[in-house]
View (spheres, rainbow, N blue to C red):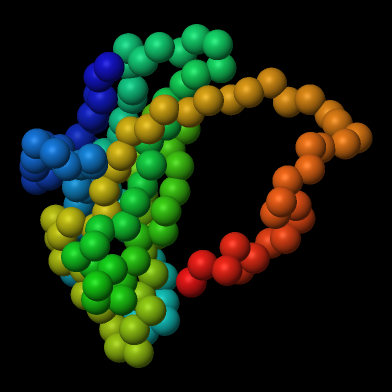
Length: 148
């Protein structure tokens, strides 16, 4: 499998990942700092377009690229919104960044803002059903497992 990267900003370093890391850091492709206001959100361009090639797309299997938060920002109350990049999308990757702090947060040019992880996807056949099998949990929802 290959991840093809089209760089829209010549100052961006190549995507890289250390051995053992699951993802690739993506950066803010901005020319000057952006301020995300307290409790605010900003959509930051990453300056890249992506294409996955060579994955086995058979029997309902495919692949996706996930946008995930970076722990370095999350520990500071600034979180990249989790998102999915469908395999057919070829536009620029953009990242929604939420500032949960009571103070403004600065994103500087080329700051690492999120990471991408390539994941397999299985899309089963959808079948309508009148009855589903019973389980111990049943329809019990949020918090019903008793685990905190």
